[in-house]
Amino acid sequence: MLEDLIVRNRSCRRFFQDHAVDIATLRELVDLARLSASAANLQPLRYILSCEPKRNEQIFEHLGWAGYLKDWPGPDKGERPAAYIVILLDTATSKTPGCDHGIAAQSIMLGATEKGLGGCMIASIQRNRLRQVLDIPRKYEILLVLALGRPKEEVRIEKVGEGGDIQYWRDRDGIHHVPKRSLDEIILG
Image (cartoon, rainbow, N blue to C red; front, side):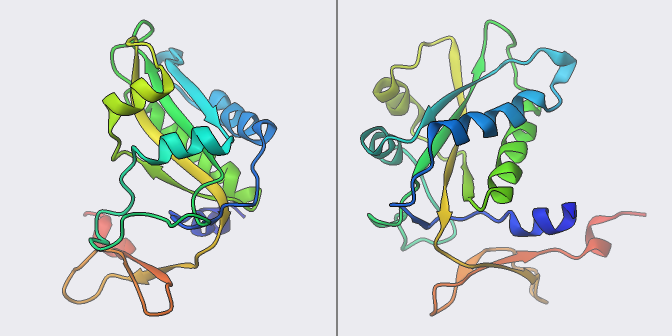
């Protein structure tokens, strides 16, 4: 059921790093994005795939991991992603991605979840440094980095409390809690 897949598709930030994700799996996930909707059918997105430890480390160094977890710099060695997909805009095809990268990223993440993987869409990126490390030509704009791997953490959806705080948090057992607004709160009229 689609609802179950969406509920299981949580932002995961700790992984079993030694659980490999192969290039064929990454290609299958990008194929889901390729088949997804694209504004005016321009299909301006391009992808860089990484599942090699050295390249993964280069990507990892240029990402921000969890803005609300102020004392957490990101996953420790052994808990880092086994793979990444960097989503780019080909500016020769379109000057703006519209919402294409959001659609593509969600398609990829749902596909990953269906395969027993987890991931996190990351927009906090040192773009100029990542561009240099991966030797990305200027005509491509870095939009998102998707971190992927076998999840090593439990993520629970919670109701937003009376104070209205929507910040995610971790408890003493390392369980990641994500408050979500009620359906009645987000539907107007």
